[in-house]
Image 1 (tube, rainbow, N blue to C red):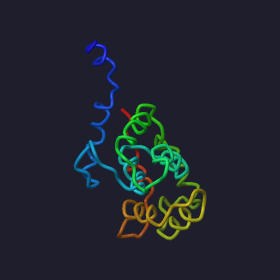
Image 2: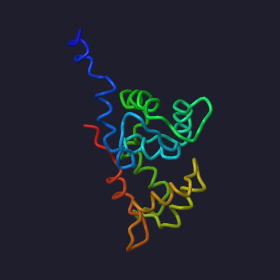
Image 3: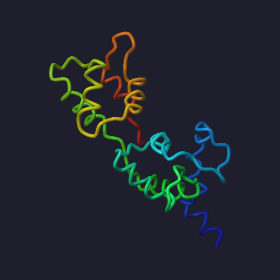
Length: 163
Protein backbone atom coordinates (compact mmCIF):
# COMPACT_ATOMS: atom_id res chain seq x y z
CA UNK A 1 0.00 0.00 0.00
CA UNK A 2 2.85 2.38 0.84
CA UNK A 3 4.37 1.53 -2.55
CA UNK A 4 1.17 2.67 -4.30
CA UNK A 5 1.34 6.01 -2.48
CA UNK A 6 4.99 6.46 -3.44
CA UNK A 7 4.24 5.75 -7.12
CA UNK A 8 1.45 8.34 -7.27
CA UNK A 9 3.97 11.17 -6.92
CA UNK A 10 1.47 14.00 -6.85
CA UNK A 11 0.78 14.42 -3.14
CA UNK A 12 0.69 17.82 -1.48
CA UNK A 13 3.97 17.05 0.32
CA UNK A 14 5.81 16.88 -2.99
CA UNK A 15 4.12 19.99 -4.38
CA UNK A 16 4.76 22.00 -1.22
CA UNK A 17 8.45 21.97 -2.19
CA UNK A 18 7.37 24.55 -4.79
CA UNK A 19 6.38 26.83 -1.94
CA UNK A 20 9.87 27.05 -0.43
CA UNK A 21 10.10 30.73 -1.53
CA UNK A 22 7.17 31.59 0.78
CA UNK A 23 9.48 32.55 3.67
CA UNK A 24 10.58 35.40 1.39
CA UNK A 25 7.05 36.73 1.82
CA UNK A 26 7.50 36.74 5.60
CA UNK A 27 6.04 33.31 6.40
CA UNK A 28 7.94 31.03 8.74
CA UNK A 29 5.55 28.09 9.10
CA UNK A 30 3.95 25.98 6.38
CA UNK A 31 1.41 24.53 8.80
CA UNK A 32 -0.43 27.37 10.46
CA UNK A 33 -0.37 30.66 8.59
CA UNK A 34 -2.44 32.93 6.46
CA UNK A 35 -1.52 35.82 4.24
CA UNK A 36 -3.18 38.84 2.79
CA UNK A 37 -5.34 38.14 -0.24
CA UNK A 38 -3.64 41.15 -1.87
CA UNK A 39 -0.42 39.10 -1.98
CA UNK A 40 -1.93 36.13 -3.84
CA UNK A 41 -1.03 37.56 -7.25
CA UNK A 42 2.61 38.00 -6.24
CA UNK A 43 2.78 34.47 -4.83
CA UNK A 44 1.08 32.88 -7.84
CA UNK A 45 3.34 34.76 -10.26
CA UNK A 46 6.44 33.80 -8.25
CA UNK A 47 5.48 30.19 -8.98
CA UNK A 48 5.70 30.80 -12.74
CA UNK A 49 2.00 31.37 -13.43
CA UNK A 50 0.68 34.38 -15.34
CA UNK A 51 -3.04 34.72 -14.63
CA UNK A 52 -5.03 37.69 -15.83
CA UNK A 53 -6.66 39.86 -13.17
CA UNK A 54 -9.97 38.11 -13.91
CA UNK A 55 -8.39 34.67 -13.47
CA UNK A 56 -6.73 35.84 -10.27
CA UNK A 57 -10.09 37.08 -8.99
CA UNK A 58 -11.61 33.63 -9.73
CA UNK A 59 -8.70 31.91 -7.94
CA UNK A 60 -9.19 34.16 -4.91
CA UNK A 61 -12.90 33.34 -4.84
CA UNK A 62 -11.98 29.66 -4.77
CA UNK A 63 -9.65 29.95 -1.75
CA UNK A 64 -11.35 32.66 0.31
CA UNK A 65 -13.46 31.84 3.34
CA UNK A 66 -17.24 31.96 3.00
CA UNK A 67 -17.10 35.31 4.75
CA UNK A 68 -13.94 36.93 3.35
CA UNK A 69 -11.51 38.20 5.98
CA UNK A 70 -8.90 39.57 3.60
CA UNK A 71 -6.60 36.67 4.47
CA UNK A 72 -6.12 33.28 2.85
CA UNK A 73 -5.23 30.19 4.88
CA UNK A 74 -2.39 28.09 3.50
CA UNK A 75 -4.34 24.85 3.96
CA UNK A 76 -7.00 26.18 1.56
CA UNK A 77 -4.47 27.69 -0.85
CA UNK A 78 -2.19 24.63 -1.16
CA UNK A 79 -4.63 22.16 -2.79
CA UNK A 80 -5.98 24.78 -5.20
CA UNK A 81 -2.51 25.97 -6.21
CA UNK A 82 -1.30 22.36 -6.46
CA UNK A 83 -4.06 21.68 -8.99
CA UNK A 84 -3.17 24.86 -10.92
CA UNK A 85 0.49 23.81 -11.12
CA UNK A 86 -0.26 20.20 -12.08
CA UNK A 87 -2.70 21.32 -14.79
CA UNK A 88 -0.16 23.92 -15.98
CA UNK A 89 -2.81 26.64 -15.94
CA UNK A 90 -1.96 30.31 -16.48
CA UNK A 91 1.09 29.59 -18.61
CA UNK A 92 3.01 32.63 -19.85
CA UNK A 93 2.73 33.65 -23.48
CA UNK A 94 5.40 32.32 -25.85
CA UNK A 95 8.28 34.58 -26.86
CA UNK A 96 7.10 35.09 -30.45
CA UNK A 97 3.63 36.15 -29.26
CA UNK A 98 5.12 38.69 -26.85
CA UNK A 99 7.41 40.05 -29.57
CA UNK A 100 4.50 40.50 -32.00
CA UNK A 101 2.51 42.31 -29.29
CA UNK A 102 5.35 44.75 -28.62
CA UNK A 103 5.88 45.28 -32.36
CA UNK A 104 2.22 46.29 -32.72
CA UNK A 105 2.88 48.98 -30.11
CA UNK A 106 6.03 50.06 -31.98
CA UNK A 107 4.89 50.71 -35.58
CA UNK A 108 8.16 52.56 -36.34
CA UNK A 109 10.07 49.34 -35.53
CA UNK A 110 12.53 51.20 -33.28
CA UNK A 111 12.97 48.17 -31.02
CA UNK A 112 11.94 50.09 -27.91
CA UNK A 113 9.08 51.95 -26.29
CA UNK A 114 9.48 55.02 -24.13
CA UNK A 115 8.43 54.85 -20.51
CA UNK A 116 5.52 57.18 -21.26
CA UNK A 117 4.32 55.04 -24.18
CA UNK A 118 4.50 51.90 -22.06
CA UNK A 119 2.57 53.50 -19.20
CA UNK A 120 -0.11 54.73 -21.62
CA UNK A 121 -0.57 51.34 -23.27
CA UNK A 122 -0.50 49.34 -20.04
CA UNK A 123 -2.88 51.55 -18.05
CA UNK A 124 -5.33 52.68 -20.74
CA UNK A 125 -5.67 49.73 -23.14
CA UNK A 126 -7.03 46.19 -22.71
CA UNK A 127 -6.97 44.92 -19.14
CA UNK A 128 -5.31 47.91 -17.46
CA UNK A 129 -2.48 47.46 -15.00
CA UNK A 130 -2.93 48.77 -11.48
CA UNK A 131 -0.49 51.40 -10.22
CA UNK A 132 1.34 48.70 -8.22
CA UNK A 133 1.60 46.38 -11.22
CA UNK A 134 2.84 49.24 -13.39
CA UNK A 135 5.55 50.17 -10.87
CA UNK A 136 6.64 46.53 -10.62
CA UNK A 137 6.86 46.21 -14.39
CA UNK A 138 8.72 49.49 -14.81
CA UNK A 139 11.29 48.51 -12.18
CA UNK A 140 12.14 45.41 -14.23
CA UNK A 141 11.58 46.67 -17.77
CA UNK A 142 12.89 50.22 -18.04
CA UNK A 143 16.50 50.88 -18.93
CA UNK A 144 17.45 53.68 -16.52
CA UNK A 145 19.96 55.24 -18.95
CA UNK A 146 17.54 55.64 -21.87
CA UNK A 147 14.31 55.70 -19.84
CA UNK A 148 12.83 53.24 -22.33
CA UNK A 149 12.10 49.53 -22.63
CA UNK A 150 14.11 47.59 -25.17
CA UNK A 151 11.45 44.97 -25.59
CA UNK A 152 13.54 42.14 -27.06
CA UNK A 153 15.76 42.25 -23.95
CA UNK A 154 12.72 42.45 -21.68
CA UNK A 155 11.05 39.50 -23.43
CA UNK A 156 14.19 37.41 -23.08
CA UNK A 157 14.15 38.16 -19.34
CA UNK A 158 10.44 37.28 -19.00
CA UNK A 159 10.28 34.02 -20.95
CA UNK A 160 10.06 30.88 -18.84
CA UNK A 161 11.97 27.84 -20.06
CA UNK A 162 9.53 24.89 -19.86
CA UNK A 163 12.17 22.22 -20.35
